[in-house]
Image (cartoon, rainbow, N blue to C red; front, top):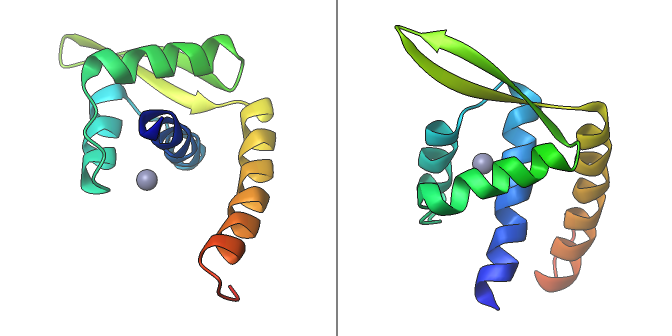
Length: 101
Ligand SMILES: [Zn+2]
């Protein structure tokens, strides 16, 4: 159950960072680690795959010093979902933190 909740938070982090710059899996794992989420590749890559299959992210393979790295960017649909999520986060934070933001 706790995992389900955190997975939602992690998806929002991913969409947010992909909205700033194209991002790749390892980078996102480190970013999430800095927020206290311990994410293995076995968790991260299926999430990215699903977000792409759902049309929220789009990937591009880039050759970085001879290694192929998959960069993910947000789609227009992903941007809409992120915007909607922000509204919900604001409302949720206001309620559960009992503060005016
Ligand atoms: Zn983040």
